[in-house]
Image (cartoon, rainbow, N blue to C red; front, side, top):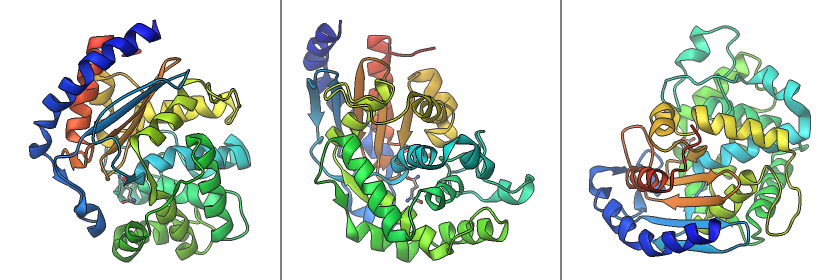
Length: 313
Ligand code: GLN
């Protein structure tokens, strides 16, 4: 089954990618982190990998980009592996917000003032503080090591320019973090927590890295290529549920209807998604729609999901 799907993907993907690329002009490259604005508006790339390591890729799949919010899925998993569900969900909720990912409105309005979920900025900053480690360097080192393992790529590292750019311009995230400290949700030094958060957002990948990381989720925590169990199944289940309900920000409902796969996007234009038990998929398309998701990337995934009947709903 997967082999013939691969054959069909091989035949269809290059042309479909070019059709989706025609939509990049309608989107906008993120500029609130100045360094991200250097990305090319017209770029679009995809990499799809199966359990034997076969892959199909098309377009600008070799262009490196920073993970941004995609990293939040995996820091959540690491925090769960470090401390368990009870400790993590004492500090972060499990519900979508319907607000923008960097909004702080519900932190003030809704008791007890904890972030609604781990994939909005307030939630992910809180999760950064929960990752095990005695200091920010140790936490960051453990996160990078974990990501390298999942991507099966020892060369994964940071884009220092993006890190600096976000650290210098991240006033809204700073205010979220100080608010969380005031509410007692963050216990550590705020600037240290933000450094860990900005660092994991600046981890640089290609579509192939995302596809390999997604493949581990598609196979419930075991890398199907090496056979190594990297994440307990229960935590993969939690991560995929959040990806489905909150992974595409406040366009997650529409994405669930049109694509029907767990996914996580980032403001760099990356999308990580997966077909359970079949494929890991990485996409890059820096031009974003109004909800902050890759415009052409979503277009391409909608078409693929419909053609191959991938929606699990
Ligand atoms: N680093 C980004 C931020 O905190 C991540 C947000 C995103 O990708 N949506 O603003």
